Length: 357
Image 1 (cartoon, rainbow, N blue to C red):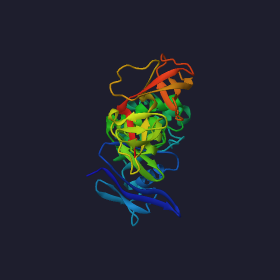
Image 2 (image 1 turned 30 degrees about the horizontal axis):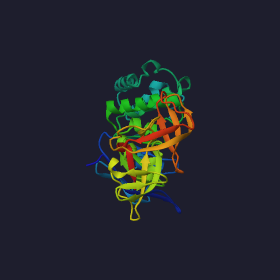
Image 3 (image 1 turned 90 degrees about the vertical axis):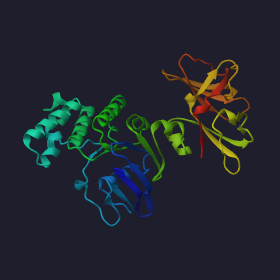
Image 4 (image 1 turned 135 degrees about the horizontal axis):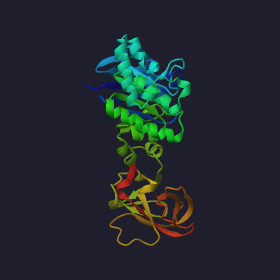
């Protein structure tokens, strides 16, 4: 039995379908992210899980019990879930300790137990020394830690997070990604996390459900999702990639101006017309200033550098294969310097060439 199950979940507003036949099973203690661009239906899905929105069709189950259906819906306060919003939603007139202990107070726990559990969780989120401060005296990251502590201290069955890091600056967002994962590893609360930031999803999640136009396009662990995307949308949304359009001809795929032999990578099936689309990540290609000897069956093509940008941690090159209108984006180490106009050889890593359906 799954901890949380979505079955053909659908939500429409008039002629607009915000969520379209979403089916997803989440195990006890699993951290699953709903990832996608604005308007893809991820927040609407989260709000249906929380009980704030009734589904138009489909059901939501927790531990085998139906929480939501078009006919009936359990109210949010009875779902044993905690939710963290973008705005943190902590009370400005309460201290840190009072904010964190408020949910325990509502549950009418003894005062000593509230005090103990509040102090314990504040130490876990590294906020124990700030228990007496008010939200206005805290940074954004500290307020987010308070929101996390308040949600976890009540020991919910499921934790829901709606883009909780979107109001933080880049460095603090990166820090809080690891903090959220650390807390999940410690408490193992089943978690559903909504974000449009692929970095957040990759760091925090056991699995990621990529959503587009109200549907789930692929659900997988971060490594598989990045290296083996099943659709063009997933390949393009999870990191940068090169899309190569070609045609299957016997043991090779012919592109504009160059050919790649299929024995160098997992053979693309192609569609009925023989058309093939490959996704090749910029960092999965290596640049050589001279023709590499004995490429061991790897795909190697010659071209020239048409543009470049130095980004500190790496070079970002634009490579035009000889006789082709295609331009490849290739990432190289800072020490791998090639001038614009220089002849180069591009070597593909076949293990990182994905065939797109």
